[in-house]
Amino acid sequence: MATALEINQPAPAFSAPNAQGETVSLADFVGQWLVLYFYPKDNTPGCTTEATEFSAKLAEFNTLDAVILGVSPDSEKSHSKFIDKHNLTVQLLSDPEHQLAAAYGAWGPKKFMGKEYEGILRSTFLIDPQGNIAHIWPNVRVKGHVEKVLEKLQQLRGAD
Image 1 (cartoon, one colour):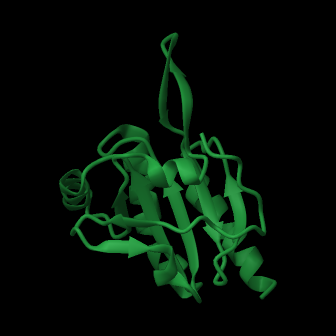
Image 2: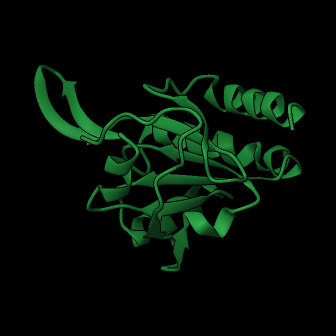
């Protein structure tokens, strides 16, 4: 697992394919706010709720000059089906080798029904227009999370 990131440090650079197979990189978003959220799996209850809630609030994030990217180990094809099935408007990136998740400390040991395994640690990172980490939400609970991210972005934008 990667070392823990801290607020105000540069966000780790990344490049990963989206659902259309196009490469998306951190550098593409210089000058914009970026919400980068990590989730375990397409079409599971919590992940679907998170993706649909971010999609529902996308216009509000856009008015604050923010882009939303979801990241999971799922394939581009899986992401494409997930987007179509739930009419998602957020971009999803494929990270099958967990390199992006590891760089952000979002890959590590988990427990489920007494078994330990490596997996995605549901977390969200707010990256400022200069490419620095502005806020981190580790161990995300889906309920109310999107509103918390939007509130923090509004608060930080107010400080612009």
